[in-house]
Length: 222
Image 1 (spheres, rainbow, N blue to C red):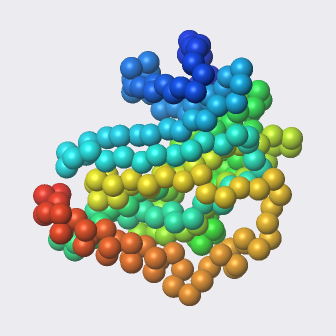
Image 2 (image 1 turned 135 degrees about the vertical axis):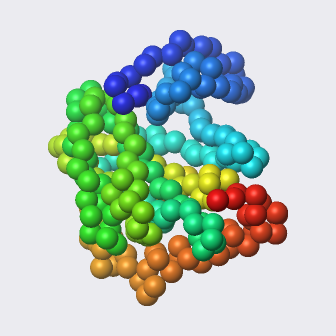
């Protein structure tokens, strides 16, 4: 599924008790997409991503979802610019939303700790990427994220991707999901002493220590 709707790939036969790897770049180079895999019998699938930021290969991997849901809860959204002189690591967060329905849906993305929302309409069988930096710019920000489908009778599929240190590292999660809103996960309940800001600084410190030990930090440059 792309931002402009679905693109159907050729079908293939998978032998009993076997596996297959599909290199998506070969079929769809330079295209933002999400993927639906289905067959005549139940399947197990995962998606792995690899890239080279100029400092060696990095990667992240995710399971998928067997069904869409009403609302998703995603921890650890962080964004801040890179500052070599201040030894401040850069952090990027992208929320990826797929609409597997045959009609358009309205979604509301909420940055819980900041009280900021983004409302978007996603066409049928399409997907969108939401960058945290598009909302907060160069202001260092940490916040949990919720994504809710507001279209009655429809569900969505969501994941969150984080990249740090000029994309020398990446992380990805589908988070938690529900088909009803959970009051206990309101903004006041999610916030704890120190909040995500404290966790962001602790994570940044650990990542920087590892890169310094590995001799990578100094190579990132200005």
